[in-house]
Length: 417
Ligand SMILES: Cc1cc2nc3c(=O)[nH]c(=O)nc-3n(C[C@H](O)[C@H](O)[C@H](O)COP(=O)(O)OP(=O)(O)OC[C@H]3O[C@@H](n4cnc5c(N)ncnc54)[C@H](O)[C@@H]3O)c2cc1C
Image (tube, rainbow, N blue to C red; front, side, top):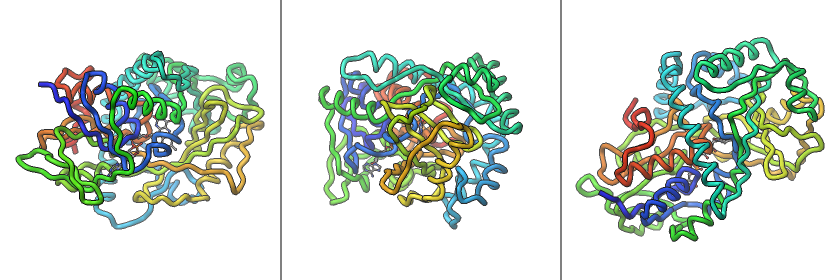
């Protein structure tokens, strides 16, 4: 059975990519967003497409490191202390998932998802109306300490075993790869199979192309509730209490998806991982290859004649507040790794913030609800939502139009906890 009319709640990268593939299947798609789809989480991120990121956030050692970071106001990780049942449950499932069995099971799944997504973005970029700077220059992970060097080298060995190309580079080899940069590091790992793109261009071009193909957009429209009859959503209710009827609903509302699902009695485990980025004009000496400063957990991406620097993960309950200490922590880490990279920031520099929708096991939720007949969900992509956008959109379109998904979505079911 084809399911021709779909309302998508949330016009981030997941919602737009789902709309793209559903539209190409001939479905009638409407995207509803409470904002104007111009500056949300899917815009200001670091733009990395990361088959190298096959280790989920929930991994051995993460909890002890996280506890140490909690004591440092400039560190890349923070949980706002609060007695909140959802947060406590999330932390419990995170703790239970942080083991090597989970990592071994999830690694090939995450790798395959990221690889497929990269290929889908490549074919999207070849189509008319798209040029979002997709570039396969790889990814560099820099480290300063022996402890981090050991961890990253272990990762490179795991990568080899999975067939992922990874090169361990000493400082001389690093210099050959990036001759302009003057490093102050022990070494790095180079993953040539990774890529990057400019998320702002991708999002803008997707909106334009979708509009041209007849997809309708309802912006500044916040969904606050649902009308349900016979285990089917009949209507969506807006914040001015108007209701409109729907046939199928796809929730791709990022970090807010859990709140919407709560309204219909469906529980998912999701926390918002707030992060910051600063985009500056290209500095005099600029890395050519997207880079992660491993100990500092800072991402640096050359993008559309600019340089974007991003980092931190704060579980702060969807607070919009920008923590200046942590932003300073991001910027202060740069001269620790480079002798000649300078990012100028004054009081007028715009600090962007976004909310990564994080699940406790680091795998997304993708699929059909087993409680309601016409509800589908795509969220929880955490630090990899941009990277996994295309493949998630494709999978959702296959599920919604009753085709066999290109990959098994069993690991991503909503009721897995
Ligand atoms: C600093 C930083 C760097 C990052 N770097 C990378 C990276 O390099 N690579 C990568 O893959 N990922 C990266 N990410 C993660 C990535 O940005 C996210 O995973 C991704 O953007 C999430 O997309 P989404 O579509 O799920 O959610 P969003 O982009 O948040 O979209 C959700 C949309 O739903 C709308 N919405 C919510 N509630 C409602 C409602 N009730 N009614 C109507 N509309 C609603 C919102 O307005 C929003 O537009 C980074 C994130 C941050 C913060």
